[in-house]
Each structure stands twice: as structure tokens, then as C-alpha cells.
Length: 174
Ligand code: NI
Image 1 (cartoon, helix red, strand yellow):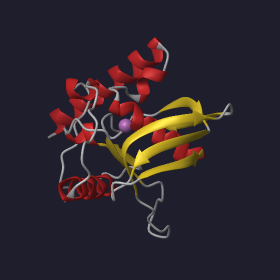
Image 2: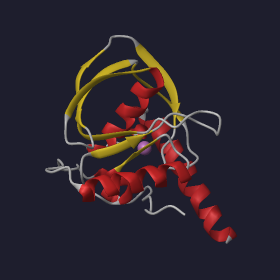
Image 3: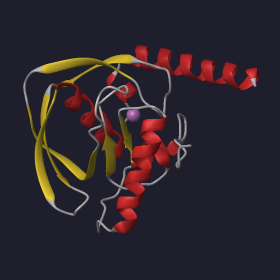
């Protein structure tokens, strides 16, 4: 069972800007492990702390899918993009806070990210392709943005309407 509950649209908390993590201690590490477990169960490839109701700049990622692929969990604290490539990449994104809705989003295919790891050490790393998409999607969450904010107004409105309709149907089917 997942340890944490993932909040969904239209919860206004998703629009809050997350605050920096001041100290990387045992509590932070335990929380990141709970986030990772919650993400695997969902299942998803990325999760930001704000999505489980914690307003801190932390996220977990693992793009390995299926049983045959080895898990490669990433835990990023206070991430910042230091540079990005010029080549765009389009990916059909989804979000655990807007389940079962997908739309194409264009973002840089390469980003260099500075972050603090679970040992409290500063790291800098290049993220490419799918990892670049996921890290940018999760970092958006830390500033209160969702992937739907990258869509045209019309596309966004249609997706949100479709999501609420699906949620309502799910609710009444219970
Ligand atoms: Ni998301």
C-alpha cells in the first residue's frame, strides 16, 4: 500500500510554491523513501513533495518501467536548472495529480540541474530525453505549475473538463 496520499486537481495546494529544504536529515530521507514507494505503487515516473501535501522542494524520479528494467531511483532536493539545450523534445505527458489525462508538451531535451542529494551534498548533473522531460515536469510542481499550463487555453480547458467528467463518473460508479 502506498504510504502517502497523492492530491489531485483541483486541490489548490498544487498551486503553492514549495519552500527550500533547510537540512537533509533522517526525516527527509525517510520521507523521500516514502515518496518513492508511493510513486512506484501509483505507478508513475516522477513525484514532487507538494503532490503528497508537503510544501518543500523535493522530488523523486525513476523512468525504469516494468519488471525487467532495473530500478534507478533519483532523489533531488532543492533542484535548480543551471542551463538548458536548444533542441526541443515533445513528450506525451501525464501527471499523478491529473490521472489518466495526457497531452503533448514541448520542453528542452537537455537540462543541467544542480541539486542536493540525500547525503546533503551538492551535485550537478545533465538530464537528457525522457529524464529531461520528467525532471522539468517535477520541477514545475515545486513552483505550482502543472503540465497543462504548457498547453493552449483551449486544450487545457478541454483536458480539465474531461478530467472532471471522468472523476465524476468514477465517483457515481462506486
Ligand atoms: Ni505531475
